[in-house]
Amino acid sequence: MASTILATDVAAPVESSSSAVSWGAIIAGSFAAATLTFILMLLGSGLGLTMVSPWSSTGASVTTFAVSTAIWLVIVQWLSSGLGGYLTGRLRTKWVGVHTDETFFRDTAHGFMAWALATLLVVFVLGSALSAAIGTGVQAASTVASGAAMGASAGASANAGDGGGTDATSYFVDSLFRPVDAARLAAPGAEGDTAAAAQASRILIASAAAGEMSADDKVYLGQLVAARTGLSQGDATARVDAVLAQVEQAKVTAQEAADTARKAGATFALVGALSLLIGAFIASAAAALGGRQRDDDEIAYVTTSR
Image (cartoon, rainbow, N blue to C red):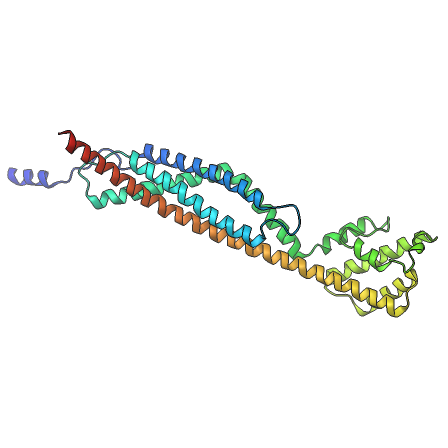
């Protein structure tokens, strides 16, 4: 009976009282990764600003800027995660009596946790700025996509007493009532021109909100233009058609811009997620490499010191 108890005691595994997680190494690696990420993001912002020019037809295109930003995100994750993971592996305590496969697993887990903590630190520091930037972009895209005509309509109602058009329609209204003879601008009857412009502005806004101009509105608008500009009915109708074509082109351009913003946002989100996955893998691999080098260097030092 005594021999049986003794054999059981010998065969029982011994559980270590210390944790397998080296939090000190994880925190140190995560702080190093977060700091390098912040530095590289500032560097990327500086390089990005130099690519954008306020002058037309100069500087990088939108596609070039988006591609370079995506590549830079991957580079940032690669470098920062590699540094943080490697430091985590090098700084962790040596595990005695642990199988090689278990050591490899623990090193990769340490690298992953260091990457996760560094990511949370970066999100905490840059989260407000990033959220503001994304929110502004999404709001601008949705405003364009839904059409600025409804907002212009509200502005026209507020300015109806003044008779002036809104910023979105003032150019088109001026095109409609541009006299054949410029001297007509100084002729009496400014009140009538103001009322006509206000009425034409409301017609354009209502048509933009509805998506098209009714036949009755088009005929009336042509008559109104002919009466206020001295053009023949045919020329006035042609001018109305030309302005409506410009309005439709502006609408198509706005829709294309909104669709481009939507695609850019989706691409940025996908590339950001991909870069984070790459960072997690690099951090885990670098931690395993750093941990193995630490153990090999210690073994080599003990061997040479004997």
